[in-house]
Length: 538
Ligand code: NOJ
Image (cartoon, rainbow, N blue to C red; front, top):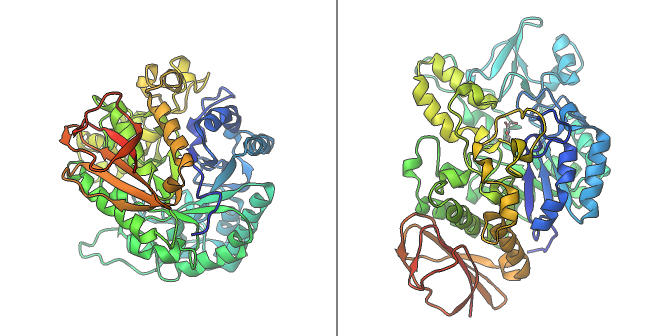
């Protein structure tokens, strides 16, 4: 495997809207990111992935771009961006941007033109039909909206304000490629590419035996035959020409398919985010979640990638609830479970990503009222299900568990006003636990989750084995223990994470030197609730 800078890096994802507000409008901004760079550098972060900061009406918090070459007003100016980038680079760190290529905002000038008449030269930049297919949008409701002025329907896989670009049209593709090059030439170091497996569609109806108005149509819009041709062209025309890193958001991709996505020979991206591990825990099925299914998925990905590809490792992002609340225990074993989960994923082979707040164990938010939620997906979920008669209480119970807003509350910097996030009224309420759960408190505590993350990052950088070693699952008697070894050039490291709140019998059979653990006191012959240890084996 080739050694590259991004394989040895640790990435930190910033959802800038909720990171740090310096202007007092209650919305995080680019100057806020700049202000916190020392914090990130001190933690050992090498790359920052910044969620969309482009001009946007913010129906989906920036995933609805109205100008790809401008900064949204709430986040500052292009000068702020340039200063931030310079400050990132001067610290030896890198910046990757979020590229939203499947759709634009309905406020993008291209869509204004496209919509103005049927014979506008940009009509074909989006997808227009006299008769829509029967697809449901990913965010609920129909995937097509009627435009009375020109008497046709336009396609939107997400909200009706996120209009799908027509990737079949080479003019569209090359315009996007130019835009990407423009950012690279400005100095950015790579991209996380949004919703990448929806670029190609199969425009046929779904079977609809119940005669519904619209039906889920995942297979018509995801990984459709021909998608790889688009991705290959983008790689050859843009990505391959520069020393950048690319990560595609590729849900539904399975481990046996990873070669065409990320292998050194034929991959279109350096890494992807697959969602399979997270699919082991879904919606209201959390009772079914078990460590065994997680192990099965992650181990399959580790084995499939080894020797041919390199992939991302992640626990959290802005689209998922907090893992300490879902897979861990955010009450009695908050600290232990946040650190055990961290060790479990972070020390496998791949480039680890940390989502803001994860490093201090931020938890799901106890919003009881639907009015407190801001996320368009959550609000649509509520609206459409209420229309279909699902009781309010039932919906609220699900929403509290799965809403993306769980991960979008403001970053908790300290115990003062608005957790140090903003002097103004935050755009979304804070998690009230910021009084005790915050960066400042943890920075001073050697045993904190934050200190653990720092030690773990340092460890990963100190042992080549933790970077390039092969991962092998270690089968133990305890089903709730996730244990694996990494092996490289005569070095072997073992990572053992007990992911449950009971105790289990276990003893290290080989001789080993303890490198890291999340308990101050432990016994040789058992693992305590959510205990994790890392050993260098002799
Ligand atoms: C995936 C992004 O992560 C999510 O936040 C967004 O809503 C959709 N893609 C649509 O762009």
